[in-house]
Length: 179
Image (cartoon, rainbow, N blue to C red; front, top):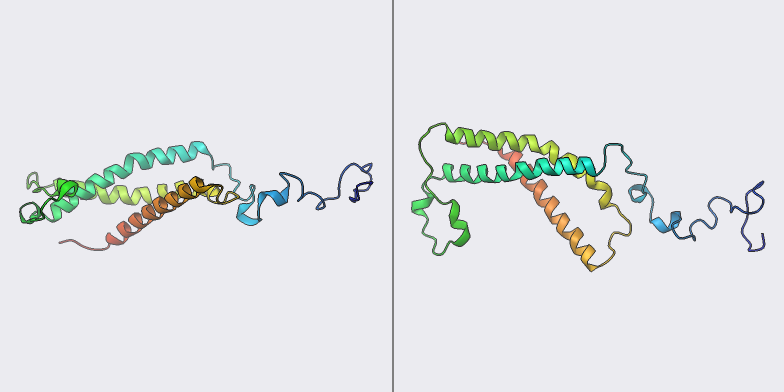
């Protein structure tokens, strides 16, 4: 060829040989970043997609507030004397759950604790499946495109890390027996 590129045999001189000149083309293999998990085809799965991610997100959106409320109720029930013994001045927003737990009906604590533990254990695979469904987004290339993109990724790191920490410590807390 006149421009100095090697061509494949039988191609009539129009097609460059595989591996040469491809990295220099925009959108070629060299433009997409390193191999491994950063390749677009690495995370291919027929299950991954916006539909699965949305369904798992809706399940978590419905379940996590229930876990939060039953956890606060459990904390208030386990420490019933906090309301009258708390002498913290200006507790502000944190004082809303410091109330005396009702003693009747007697099964109320068992119900809230059972819902909290059962729902928490049931949501662990949902959380892991949600993270599995969105992991390709973690490996986009380039990793950071702008300052706002970096802040977005940092906030997601904190959110995912916090969620995993809370679920892991909740599972570890199950082994304790509260008499």
